[in-house]
Length: 235
Image (cartoon, rainbow, N blue to C red; front, top):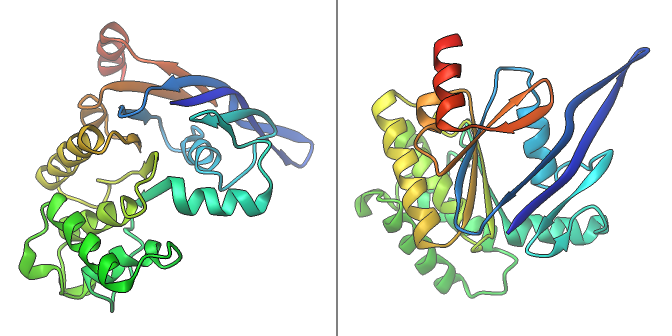
């Protein structure tokens, strides 16, 4: 379970105090696919950085399966990110001159697993994300955008994380490919019992997730069928 407790992040800008994340609290059961929608500047990226232990909150806490991130020393946070969190980015962040298999193997470098076993797991994950087997050995720069995002998702799963954070995972993809990616994330959250949180500006994509939240001026609210209908009318 992911528990976010009264999370606040403030920044100073001259004489002003900015709160991109302002008293955010929510819980997600393990295996949930959830989304956060919000306009540019609403605090989505800041919140994702806090959840991924890339930044520390001004106050509040993130608790993952009973482990508090706020009280964790920096060294342990690094190991935690490597072991328990997977990241999927809009820009893919893959190494272009390496193959799909080699990219997926990278997070497992420090796992103590033999290279042959790492390669086998990488191929299994690429099969799970439905990348054609004949493209497993192909360099990233020879794959399409949708294929690269599948590799990025497989890489995020490499160390069997408890939580995957996806920042605009369909932002650089066409509509049809984007729909395939969100369907893939939904399947993987069930099959791996992994909590996946997607940050997006795409409301149609968000509506395909189990739970939907809206971030506005640093404050988070969960959307219901009624609030989604209102939001659709008001834009």
